[in-house]
Length: 221
Image 1 (cartoon, rainbow, N blue to C red):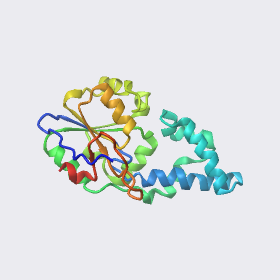
Image 2 (tube, rainbow, N blue to C red; image 1 turned 180 degrees about the vertical axis):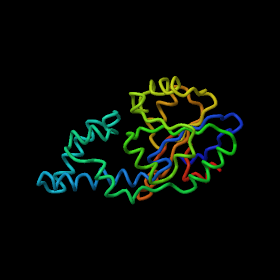
Image 3 (spheres, one colour; image 1 turned 90 degrees about the vertical axis):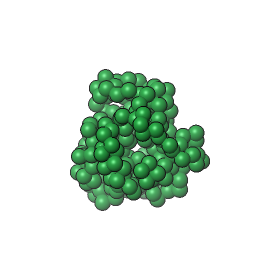
Image 4 (spheres, rainbow, N blue to C red; image 1 turned 60 degrees about the horizontal axis):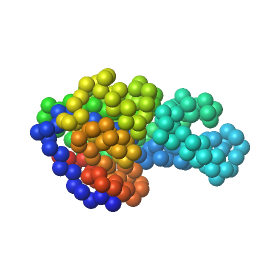
């Protein structure tokens, strides 16, 4: 597990790219939704045991991992014949902001940095989460990978993002809990990269490899 404390050079940074799920928000909501709540409702709809439903869904999830389909509400509504957004509303009380996120957003905006949310979340999920958390006003722009046409795991994503929202990779900081996304950003040339040690507060800290990582956003204040 990387215990390297991040030391971003704020004088060199003019743009901050922030992930949503697992970075700003507790990943417990998404993990509980896909691993517990969807299998429960799928089992009820199909007359399956919860374990059989979990096994079937696990295989379907694995087949789409790292693709836009995995993050798409529309895809899973069609694939599973379930009202995914209604099911999300059933457990929306679990949507929670990680500690010190708002303090951090206030501080970097006060410092004059551009602050852009860059997420793989589908726009329907993004609307739900922004409505629940009230975070929208802290960002200059919100970008979903579904607008770009590629997931953040693909290095070409960053090139397309740059045509939509110009930024200089040499003076940009990205904070993300997904190590594959950080790898793709590093391949593209984004200079300052920070991982999140505990995206899901109900799970143990994760190994962030060679990436400097935060326990929470107080580490960056």
